[in-house]
Image (tube, rainbow, N blue to C red; front, top):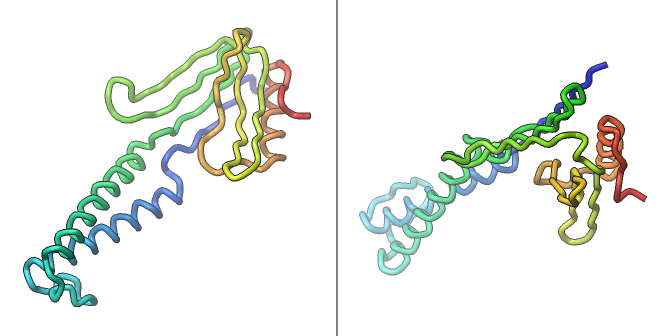
Length: 181
């Protein structure tokens, strides 16, 4: 039986991020082109009569909003390309090491790689908060009471899914499970 368990963590390359980056880019380009159409007094978008707008104040505001939206969409596309937050959790019983690997923004701290010894892990803790902003998270709880999150960010997992994952991980590591009644 394999003594190594690897959980992939989905970063910013999720469908909703592609959707929002595309939507913001299209909206920003439209606003920007409407603003330029009002300045040059010619139709840059064939389906809108924007050359009749006054450049001051409507056209300049449309150009400004379009520029801001384009910059936001560039940021969103870069986070998707760089896969910010993506990585994996590796639980290696053969070597007794847990590795948490995540990607960040480019620079000297682009790669976050944390190693913990399995013997330093006291428990697997499950945190479930319902309400307007629900949280369903799994933590590695160390013997010195640090809590290291190991679940992905985004949509909360189903209750049975998080319970099953936490239970199997606690059994695999040979530690107790906290937070599930």
